[in-house]
Amino acid sequence: MRNSEYFKNKKVTIVGLARSGVACANLLHRLGAFVSVTDIKDDAQSRQACTKLCFSEITVELGKHSQDLIKQADLVVISPGVPMDSLCVNWAKEFNKLLISEIEVASILCPAQIIAVTGSNGKTTVATLIGKVLAATQKKVFVCGNIGNPFCAEVEKMRGGDFVVLEVSSFQLETIKDFKPAIAIILNLTPNHLDRYNNIQEYADAKKRIFMNQDQGDFLVLNADDQLLNSVPFNLKSKVIFFTKQEGSNPNQSAVIAVGRILEVELGKMQKVFQEFKGIQHRLEEVAEINGVKFINDSKATTADSAIWAMSNISSPIILIAGGRHKGIDYRVILDAAKDKVIHAFLIGEAKDIIAADLKAGGFAIEKVDTLKEAVTKAYLSARPGYAVLLSPMCSSYDMFTDYEERGRVFKRIVLDLVQEVKSHG
Image 1 (cartoon, rainbow, N blue to C red):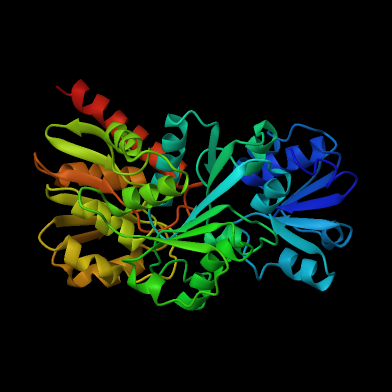
Image 2 (spheres, rainbow, N blue to C red; image 1 turned 120 degrees about the horizontal axis):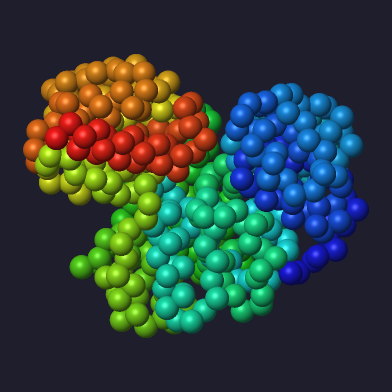
C-alpha cells in the first residue's frame, strides 16, 4: 500500500455501520488509527454488523450519535447512506473536521490504477465487464465499491501495476477530496435520488465530482448518446473519450470497448468476454419456471429507466412487482414500455401509494400488498403459462431490506419455496 503511515495515531470516527463502514473500521485499526463507529440504528442488522468488527479496541455506539465522537475526531468517514444534512455531518462542519468517504480512505492507500464507473444505470454491468476484460489480458484486477467487497476490504491486497474497478454512486462522490481515478466513466444521467437532491442539476453535480481531480494524464469516458449528460456543462482537464452505441453492441458494451481501447486491449478479446458473459446476480436473473411461468429477479433495478430496460428485454406478458423506498422519481415514464406488456402490477413498500397513483393510467391492474412474499404468491396466481413475474422495484430497498442484494435473495428464496410447494401438491 501507499501512505500506510497516513492514518497512524489519528482519531477517526466512522458514521454508519454498513459493509463499507465495517471494512473501513477494520482497515484503519490495522493501520494504527484510533477508531470509533457510530450508527443511529440499534437493531438486529446493526448488532450483526458489530460482530464483523475484528478488534475489541474499536469503540462502538449504536442507537444514537454522540457529538463528542465527532468533536474528538481528526477526521470523519461518512457512509454513503448517511444524508448530508444529518447531525453528524453538521457537527463535522461545525467543528471543521475533515469529512470524507470510504472510497477516499482506500484511494489514499491504493497503489493500483483506479478505474471508476458511475451513472444512473448500468454501473454494475460495466464495472463487471471491465474487470473481466482486464482479467482476460492477465492483469491483476479487483472489482469493488458498490459491487462485491468494499474498496477498503481489498486495498491491502493491491500492488503497483494492478487495477481496481470501482462502481461508485453519487452519494460516495459527495465527500471525496483527492480521489483521482486514472479513468472515470459516466454512463448516463436520468432523474434519480430526487429524495436526496433538490433537482437534477444537484444530482449531476454530484456525479461530475468523479473527474474533479483528474489532470491531462487521465481519461474521462462519456456517453455521446445521452441527451441529459450532454446538456450538463463540463470544466475538464482530462482527455475526453466519447462512446456511442455501436452496431452489434449495447451501450454498456460500447463503454467497455472505449475503456479497453484506452488500455490497448484487443477488440477480439473484449468481444469474447461479451459472448461468455452470463449477466450479474439480481439483474434480469432468471430464478425458476413454475408451470410455464418464469420468475425474474431484477432487484438491482432501482430506477425507472432500469425497469424500462428490463421490460424491453422480456418478450412475454409481465406481472410486475415493484416498490420500496421512494427516491423522488416519476414512475409515469415507464408507461410506454409497460403498454400492452404489463398485465398486472403488485406494489410493495413505502412507495406503493405513489407508484399506484403514477401508474393508474397504464390500463393494467394494480394491487398494493404488504410483503414481498404476498406479492410473489399473488403474482403467480395471476399469471398464465408464458407469463413472466418480474421483480423490478424502481426503488431503493432500505425500507424493507438491507440492500438490493438482500431483496433479491429473499425474492429467490420465496420463489424456490414456491417451487417446492407446487411440487408437493402435484
